[in-house]
Image (cartoon, rainbow, N blue to C red):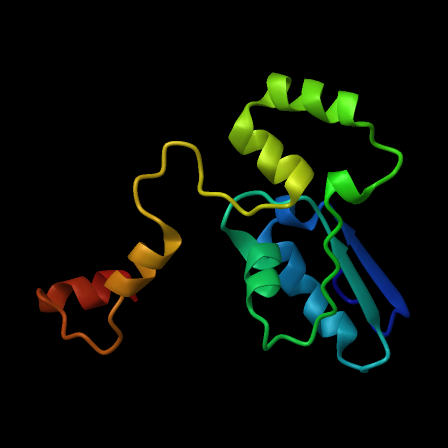
Length: 132
């Protein structure tokens, strides 16, 4: 996909499961401004470019959410069986499009982000060299 420029359409299916580096590699192909991109997926936790773009409402995307209960092809009987098979969390993510925490996560994403402070002086100066 690198080197190919000016496509009319890019479709990323199951985008929540696509590595962020692949999405980043698609960005230069869209430089002409004529490329339409469709990213679609069921959620895969609160991580990755798909989640970030879904949550970032200043990003220029049209967001369409289709809950399984809104699809006339999916029966209540099937949903009840799927709920029993998958358990509440997996079912909610897979069929109700909910971005959930990773299994076993102790801290929410918001809690972690509150701990990140920009422009904090390094506690140990040699750490800066290791980190850069």
